[in-house]
Amino acid sequence: MDDLKRMAVFATVVQHGSMTAAARSLGMSPSAVSQHIRQLEREGGVTLLHRSTRQISLTDAGQRFYVQCATLSAAAERARAELAAEQQVPSGELRLAAPVGFAHHTAPALGAWLARFPQLRLRLLLDDVPIDLIQARVDLALRFGPQADSNWVARKLASTPNWLCAAPAWIHARGGVPQHPAHLAQDTWLTLSHRDQHQLALIWQHLHSGERFTVQAMPRALSNHQTAVQALCEAGLGVAVLSAMDVTESVQSGRLVQLLPEWDMGLLDIWAVTPQRDAQPAKVRQAIEELQAYFATLHGVNP
Image (cartoon, rainbow, N blue to C red):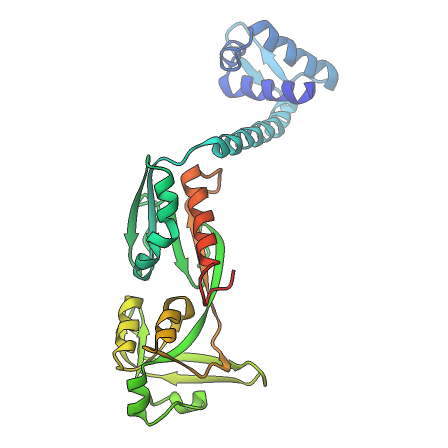
């Protein structure tokens, strides 16, 4: 343990450029700092620092040794930050970015937690187009589906199946429920899209036989908001692929019908994304925990 302390002292001396400045930073006397450096040199059998009356400089051995000591010192700082974060009480403003459809989940997911900490404020930024976390000063973002490689930190919270849905009125007007994905190519499709899109490629896999089938379809209506797509679908204007998390209540109430339930359309992953990799403040860490616990209670969501 003494060696670890001496290595930390050595790194501090190099970072501050003098024994005296390092001593002030560490709350030690300059003579104690000098003694730690001499002990390191004595035990290692090498000179680490060239000393003059005005400055110090690293020897070649000292430069190589400093790289390792600096890494150790940085790791210790991160460990201390982790402990400090554990002791924090969530406070200030939590800037949470999420898709528009998350609006009606906000209160049941975070309401009780916010009530426990009156010093905590929530700023909810709703947009189905992912926003830049740094520019918008976002602490935490909820995102759905595949995540592009980035510098952000993504933690998977849950998954929700994709369901093919339509309103009873649409099924009646169509003349009945389709029995196979092949029967859907010419139907009226509704879809979420953030760009010009002229064709959908939809992939199914049968849960029992393993058969895979792809349908190329032309969307009749597109929106950049998932809630708008669901509203159009419930109004009987077409068929849409929607997340089970969003439509379970509508299916249970009869506003929507899940079509082809024996065919798997894949999972939509739910992610908590943060802009930093170091220890998170309590407001971010606890918000992630609350969201994960909430998603675990929802029908149509796999923890």
